[in-house]
Length: 350
Image 1 (spheres, rainbow, N blue to C red):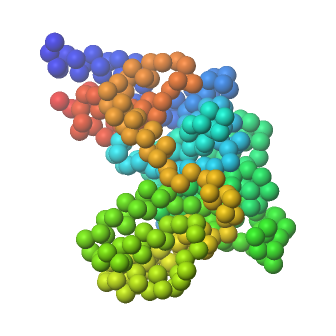
Image 2 (image 1 turned 90 degrees about the vertical axis):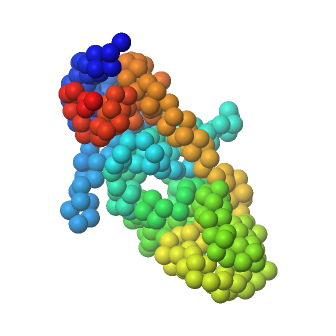
């Protein structure tokens, strides 16, 4: 069959299925359509534009079923991860929880966002938990604030992601005048973003080791071993000596340590439990990596290019996967790799 004819057939079908195109406007239309479905069938929950710092514009698309909302709100340990692999100009964000009963990771929320800033993540967390609370009638709870709920959150070392979550906790606790359970001389409402993160936030060990390994050829064996040794729940015999070894290990090692201690301020207590305020029992019970998120994102990344339109033809929103939203955001990538997000439903370039 002639490829031009195939293109025309696909474009005709795409125009019928997505009258607002396959870009952000199409996502907005789909969110409006899903808002009119019975609650159990809703998946694309919002497609919104927000103003953030310096007049920049943030676009977010959030996808979660009520079942996913329930898993999220009942979770004890969360993991969050971001992928940059699929829709150009967008980052895919995912929250997972661990299902103890079935011993597997469960996706609690999926989203696409155009910014990785702390303000963008604050808005993202606000909207995700607003949707989950409306779905379930449950309030979001962090153990260090409410005495129940999320004990730990594990993520990579992205500063905007962590700081945004810390800012969200500041908002949650702004009227909580009770003393902190870990530092009774401080009220919860007086804690800053990094104070909150020190009480529940962990870095993915796999990400951490991967980043350290990238410096392997730039540092000595002794410095390399010292860097790896920081990721532990055990008390170092002499932590200051270990830090000194790294600090004097050359420009790259010194810069790396400065970032962990001063740049990304939550990083050091998020890898070294004695520097955090996370109870040792919570730390050891928590997953150590975000591999569940990564595996899910990798799987969907490979499947998204194979059938972006077929997935959208399914009406059971419980079965809609992340590849569905990728197809919407990515446009008609099955036809033309040159077409980017925001394309209309018209003909693709040959």
